[in-house]
Image (cartoon, rainbow over all chains, first blue to last red; front, side, top):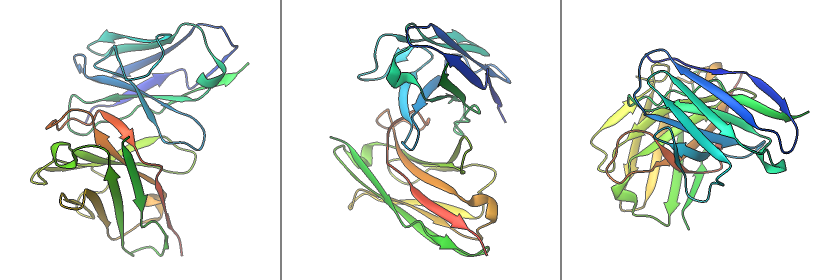
Length: 107
Length: 122
């Protein structure tokens, strides 16, 4: 089974900061990676698929990059509504394994 | 507007069973695979199962295979998850979610319900 590891587990940042979250796959998944945002008490929301394709209505301050086993989610200028937990997910296999999550909290 | 509404969650004893439902609207249900994803209290997301649009192909996570069964009724635009032999560690919010691509099997999940809570406790 593919394992997905995110780092860091928690990011403390301020409004306007640039935030980068990493996701590592235990084996190559080509570009088959998605990112989700989950605000407290809410369902997850798809942000990015196929490593870098923004979902509908997702602000352009979000971007994704990487390939193979190393991937990155970047928020170029953190906004108040971006404080949430972010999950990467591989879909190279049918199992859709998620990373453990990265919480972006207010500094 | 796409809508997904889960129901059927409850407090149940270990070894018990439940049938979760997910009523959908706003998209052509039969063209999309559907998934179940769960989240234990304070924990991360865990993919549970995916079923193809036709219902013929089903995939399960290792932790639920043999105990959970996914199904769908395309005449009622409704997804189901039969959960049997429940264990304490099955306690979680269960979300249904729509696979992004028509006729795709890989779980890129672009629309989610609000979840239904399953609590397994004696």
